Length: 364
Image (cartoon, rainbow, N blue to C red; front, side, top):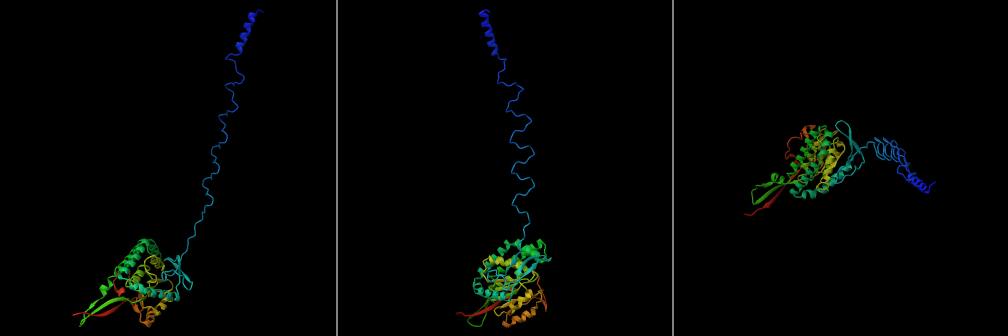
């Protein structure tokens, strides 16, 4: 073979080996799948299938762990006495149940005893000197502060009055308003009593005869049985406004507004022992207050409608040390509770006052 033609044949064979149309050994055909490529219909790895809750997530409508779903138990109250600015339990350790106007349980209250009454009288006597010696203006300011605190606890007082007396919410709120207004009315008289009830008396001679009202001392009071707040205020306020101290036996079956009032008094500026409140059976405690030798006066208003109580017997017991006695309303043995919605007057203030007369010489 011609050498020239042999070289041409070798060159043609080399060109054919490196042609663009020739497939390389590592090239994949267009329809062939690469080893790492996923098919379109296969979910990628580490991805949760649809409609499956992610891990560590609680299923819907399932309560979280450690959550208490049971209904709580209401805290039942046991109220104490209010003596000497403190809240002691009854010396006897007894309590009794308080129910609302429909007979449903409300709370437990301490059942006061003879010893509790004696302790309350001692506390009232101990506070008398300071309270009677305070200026009339100061007493009025202290009592006005009590009204401010009553206003702040209006909702609680209204709830208790409604439960005790069977009133609608609007009616109970009206009673609370009247009680607060009544307290303010009496507080305003503190520095006007001497001007109205005292004076200079004309005498024949070179003398001045001056009459001034003074507080009687320790006054026991039986709070009204039916009017748990308005009646209580109407009995209590006129006693202390002139400088007396008092021991009040609350309504036997409706004492809760009085207990709340004691909590108001404890947080006010009223000195300890000026007002002392005892809950319990009227028939059990009232005779000991009526016969107590260190009680100077007694209000028998709460004897009306009280269980097993004769106000005439209490009046006779009060005569031993010549107590001043304010009788309940009504004629004879048929005592009735007054209409407390009527406008008050000075009758109850004057009932616990004594008049001191002073003679003083005057110049020509």
